[in-house]
Length: 130
Ligand code: CMP
Image 1 (cartoon, rainbow, N blue to C red):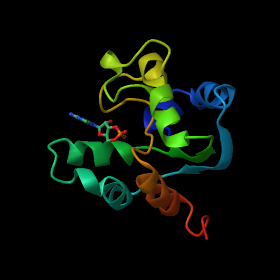
Image 2 (image 1 turned 180 degrees about the horizontal axis):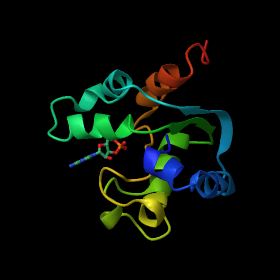
Image 3 (image 1 turned 90 degrees about the vertical axis):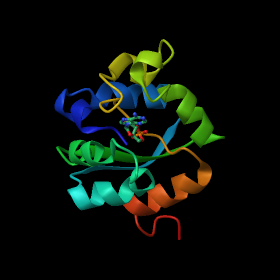
Image 4 (image 1 turned 120 degrees about the horizontal axis):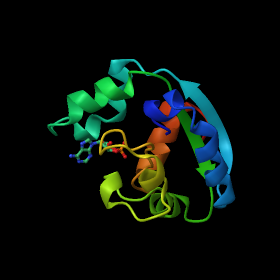
């Protein structure tokens, strides 16, 4: 999921270009405006963390780009490709290093495990996996 600050900054195309150049195939893509309740549901796993409320407010502040990407070992490969959660700690060349502004405005979200990816695909593209 490409985050709101990237849509606002008109950098969606640059990021999608890099996604494709790194061997990921786009299987689904949608520009979505999340309501705060949607963001709360998507990030429910973080509901007890101090940053949860701010994160949900931010993630519903403008449209995001949700994508389903395919590649061998896609979840782990994508995590490597986007880099550490905090852009300041991300490796050179990663998406978060190049485009992230802060730990919250870190450009992009990637599923953290195969099981989570299935839930997140169902969240944005209900029925796609049936
Ligand atoms: P994301 O991959 O979208 O998953 C949860 C998000 O919470 C994370 O990226 C960050 O943008 C955000 N976040 C904000 N503060 C923190 C923090 N202190 N630790 C981890 N994640 C944080």
